[in-house]
Length: 168
Image 1: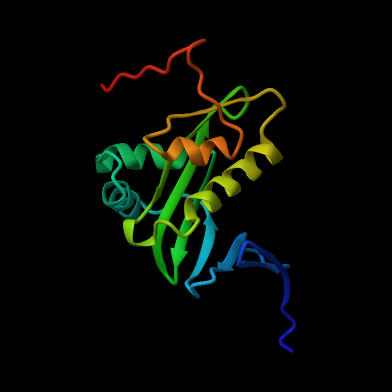
Image 2: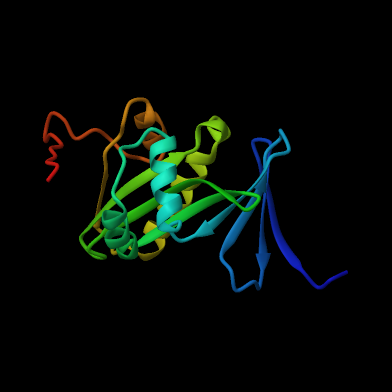
């Protein structure tokens, strides 16, 4: 009727669609509870990034750190509920040998709707599409998030190796 072509798929009670031929790489989906979300490529703006980290339970970051770090995102996604950003995830790394998945989070009132899985699926699709064969992809799993990451093939490194960190 309006000349819009859609690619539509249904899986586990979730209807998803892409607008074919659109210059914007956005996937839309509707859950069975009729909440509508869209997934936009790219990290959120700095102020949204800072808010989502804190409201979802991740550690706070400074404006300066976010302003320096976000432009170095190799691939990122932002989940929108209408026009409101409610989730995000990023891949960072050297673009060849090593990548790290970071900042996977969903605002508490939107958790439990499969949004974290959709964020991970988009990040993994981009890694499979663009990362060279043999690239090492790592992440730090907080609490029960490890169960989500295991669904995407991630395994614990222990006892062969142990993740370590230092905050400066």
